[in-house]
Amino acid sequence: MAEKTNGNAVSIGMVVARFAFTLVFILGIFYLTSGRLDWWEVWAYTANFLIVVIFGRIVLVVIRPDQIKERMEAGQKENVKSWDKWIVPVIGLYMPFLSMAAAGLDKRFGWSPDLPDGIQIAALAALFAGSMLGNWAMLTNRFFSSHVRIQTDRGHTVVDNGPYSVVRHPGYAGGLLAWIAAPVFFSSWWTAIPCVVTIILFIYRTSLEDRTLQEELPGYREYAGRVRYRLLPGIW
Image (cartoon, rainbow, N blue to C red):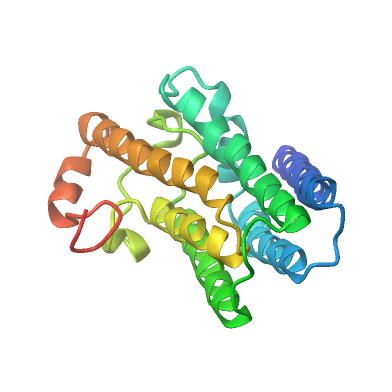
């Protein structure tokens, strides 16, 4: 029991440290690029981040610490797909940085006209919904990892309940919704550039991951026959 408790404590400490770093990182980017933090979009975006983390990652530490460990250490595993080693940092670090920097610079120099508050709030709601869909997928699927690999060391099996009964990759579906909403929320068409790049990479990664699962995960091909669509019901 002591070893399990210590392991959980390490995971909680790492999650809290990453959470604090990311929070400072987000506010720092917005401040350095816009020169100010007195615009409501910054704080609404930050609040969205806080809620998503609290109801996702922190809850996961309590109920499923082994999954948090997997998400933190997956990139170091030998069986991570080679293509995912470059996709993950691009969509998980570089594109978020560029999108926030573009929003901040757009705010500083006024490159894009402000959209009505009602449209921005609707986009914020879509961004939040997409983020929470990602949380739902992660909490439903104990094999929801940060990198694509078949987790034989964790008894990897097919998950077909919750959002996985509707589409095969609900986490990516939520991410797509959030990335589509982001430039509208920030009233920044320059922000749309990294967002579009990320959306393309999300679709590409979904295709590669789905092919990997069909080829290597027992039972997934049968699951794909039952749940036909990867991201959008009735479309793809």
